[in-house]
Figure 1 (cartoon, rainbow, N blue to C red):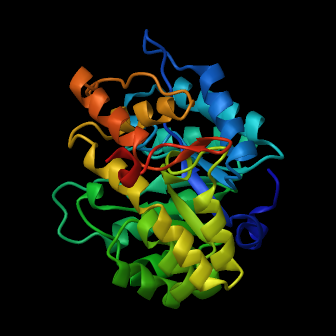
Figure 2: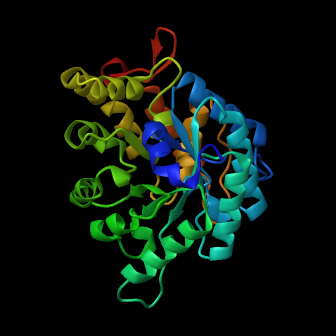
Figure 3: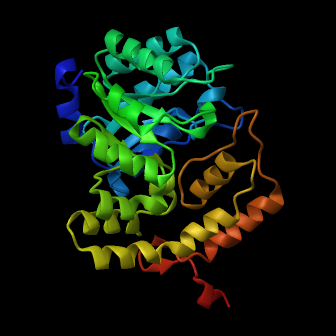
Length: 330
């Protein structure tokens, strides 16, 4: 590891900053992991898109369809490829505690910076706080690596700001991906102070969270590599402007991405989020590939609609060349 357990919070405050992306997992036509494609995406994101860190094998990455050896292999590829380029946070989420610990220990040994573990699904419970505190304390007691919590509606409940702040007292609980309403994560930001880095996956709220909550970490989803290309780094640009206090300039750049955001939103089939995003990646020259079951593949008509939206959203994909905006397409 790159730090001692007792220094986990200090290390995270110094290094867990900027724009972090949640990786999609590219598969080949036979549904095996495209290891070379994954490494190529990682290099593109860090070197060309200036992404500061990558979240590996999470929900975007279809972890639910991956074997334990496959998840470990993704950890290895990411840690090796991004060493010296960008940070890594490995998703060790699972309902089975032994699996969580096995993945976490592998992350520790392969050179990961941090791990993330989502709050477990708890059946038949009417209260969760003591169960969840004990859950994260057990992880903290048995691991040295910095741990990020993750609370989202998929668990069937949301962790309260007060509970999260209590868990943040544990020595190597360093961050939370808090997929909750804004008033909840704003409250936690105030409660936890410098004991916990609070962030959420919404790119649309990222600018406001920099300006109003003094956030310095976007953790994380796919927009950093879907809204940008090597020749169009507007998310990076508005982030850096906002960090520098140049709020009006940052807002203008942020708002200029609205046509790209809208194109992605309106062409995303309700049951096919990963499939749509992988195809958008391919249109950008990245490696996407199919999804694994239980996720559904795109139809030809859906692919045509996505391509048409991509080609008219105004995203620059080559020097001096942008996809057409609405006015150009009219």
